[in-house]
Image (cartoon, rainbow, N blue to C red):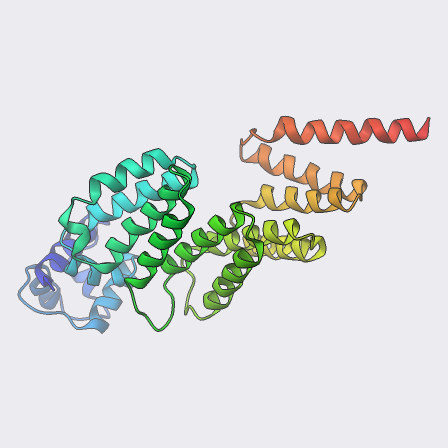
Length: 297
């Protein structure tokens, strides 16, 4: 591990936040020790790095990772670009990034970062090339790279991707089995840093339950997702979850309840300035209103 890189990063973060060495050292160590640490003259103990990370407002694992991967900032930027492409369903862009970085030795210095590339390669094999078998094989290959006692958040994301591939091929029992394993594994995490991972899981579980005809179970799962988002003050998929409850009521032919939830979904989408579903939902609402009028005339 290159501890001089850690010292450089501490100095950089301290200066960005306009914290003096004396202020950073307070309640942790001496100013002289901070100076030596920043100059790479001493090896910090884990407890000191933890306290420094708390004061600088970052995860302590950042320091350990950057010591193993000197150009961690570059790797994290690639991870960010892949995440953006994944959330916006831009799979060809994702494939271009993966193909370029597969030749980058930085990603072979740390299993976690190699796993990142292989995971997204598996996603591309399915969504770009429609190769179901190779996609699943590649996702499994990514999972086999690490051998932790408990799954990491990245590994749970990979499993979630695998479940989605099963779902889109109408292998519902297989998808639900994967989703439920992720749900169980998530409870073993000491702390869930990416709150939206649980929201994504619950939304995809709900979709699978609906396709199986388990409308009540799907609605309960959606409500859990909504409650989680509200608890964490996060609107991610909140509109979709409300819409999906409405859709469950629609399939159960309870159109009045369906309207209530779809109106709530429209309101949330409007607040988010996301109008791609507006015409579709408004079309449903207008049809139900017309049907109601015809019944009463």
